[in-house]
Amino acid sequence: METDVLIIGGGPAGLAAAIETATRGLDVTIVDESSSLGGQLCQQTQLIRPLPSVYQPMRGFELAKVLTEQINDFTVGTLLNHRVIGLYADGSVGLSDEEKVFPVKAKKIVVATGAAEQAVAFPKWTLPGIITIGAAQTLVNRDFVMPGKEAVIVGSSDFALDVASQLLEVGVEVKGIVEKNPAAAAREKEKTDALIGRGIPFYFNSFIKEARGNGQVEEIDIEVNGEILTVSADVVCIDGGRSPILDSFYQLGCSFGYQKELGGWIPQYNRQFKTDRENVFLAGNAAGISQQGALLLTGMIAGISICEDLQTIRSGEAEEIRDALWEELKLSEYKDVWEGRTKHIEKFSSPVLKDQFIS
Amino acid sequence: MHIENHPILGKQLQEPVTFYFNDQPYKAYTQQSVAAALMANGVKKFGLSRKLVQSRGLFCSRGRCCSCYMTVNGEDHVRTCMTKVEEGMSVYPNLEDPEVRREKHGD
Amino acid sequence: MDKTTIICRCEEISYEEVEEVIEHGGRTFDDVKRLTRCGMGPCQAKICTGLVANIIHEHTALPLSEIPLQRMRMPLSPIKLEILATNSTAFSAVKSVLDEVEIEDGKVR
Image 1 (spheres, helix red, strand yellow):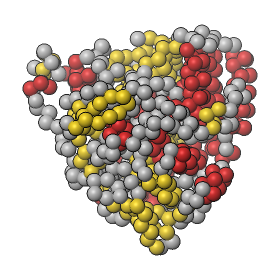
Image 2 (tube, helix red, strand yellow; image 1 turned 45 degrees about the vertical axis):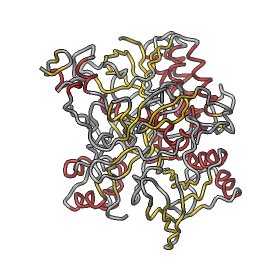
Image 3 (spheres, chains in turn purple, yellow, cyan; image 1 turned 180 degrees about the vertical axis):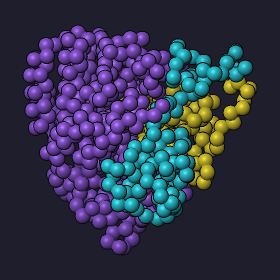
Image 4 (cartoon, rainbow over the protein chains, first blue to last red; image 1 turned 30 degrees about the vertical axis):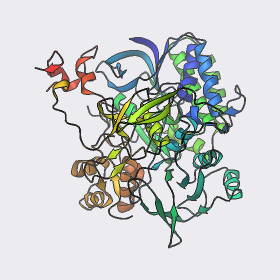
């Protein structure tokens, strides 16, 4: 199989890149492991803001729908329930549809594999019922299943607090939010205030001492200021933050740099969202963890840059659009993330970690 | 428990199916993953770990951690968080490493 | 952290085992992997990488930027050997060792 642009990952960034490239006449193929496009947006019921100026404010699943509808107007090949399993020697990407493995030869590749949730380990965290915060959200908003009756949340990022409210709305009792630091990690203080207002206890300077249960979690010990508090819970949600998914970049032979503000190790890339590998671009959380609106913008920039490379847009025009998108990106993400991104791009020509790939 | 009426998404559960866990029938809906369908029916323990023989269940729900491995329709080590439940599906827990030298799989 | 806490869920490697590798001079994820099997189970280090990096960081004061990524190998996620061996449309690096196996009627000859 051959295509102009192969987009790995059909989440917001991948779809944004698809829209930019398909609308400019390129033959685009999106591959995604799940059975629908939209990625993690599909189960986001909270309002997404800020969004790029071309979009009205809306909830995550609505945005997923809007983006998907836009690509439906063009001939975009979508390979759902397909996985990237590796790379062929000639540079083709190896996909599997669970029946066979086949190569896809693309002129340009956009890796938009998103982010993975990080774990927080404590004694017996492997017990059933102890799940990631993202898994809890998937159960409630995609599978329409109650993960349990009594939940404890470990970590207090904006995302964790969004999910805490969503759990409350479907009738799960949130018994407490455990945070190792002296204050909530969430940047939007109103999320913390709203939960405190609903009587949800926050345990700061605290951690899980131990989980217990026969075959599944039944209770946990929280160490709060040196004292042990035992709480009954049948679901514990772990929020350990997120970091970019790098497997595909590694196979493609990209160099990596470390940028704490962007989620740790990320591929080296430049202002075009192009990696140091010829024809390999990236977008979304895979290029650094940021907010939904910013993720869309990174996908748009990658898409424009590909159009420029494949000459479906004049270079001057591409540069103009890209400048405008970068301006908007600056306004769409938190200052420290933006500064981290700027620093990361400045380091493009001097990769920190080069040639890690050994076949 | 199934969420019949979601506060934001409304009534989404439409096509019911019956699947079997340890030969017992359970009710689920077509859009659910096998893992979610089991959790809706109060089943959280999906199997045992290989070395310390401890209980395991759903963890990441993203097809990454492999903690939700089960035997589905006779196939071992299926990631149940990435597999949609189907009518008549037969699910067994992942209690030990599968026997690989079987005639039907090519000895 | 409690010494018995599991760090690698798949291979069930404890905090203590990771710590021991660091005491013996281990400074990367792959050091820990080679000496303990940490990260060698079905998930292929997708969950434990960050945990191990943090333990190395805490024990050695090495900044996280100096603790390199682990080697990531094909296949990127679990796949049936049957799919790799019998139904592939092209022979190439993806199949690697399987290229050398001859299959007849679904059986290895």
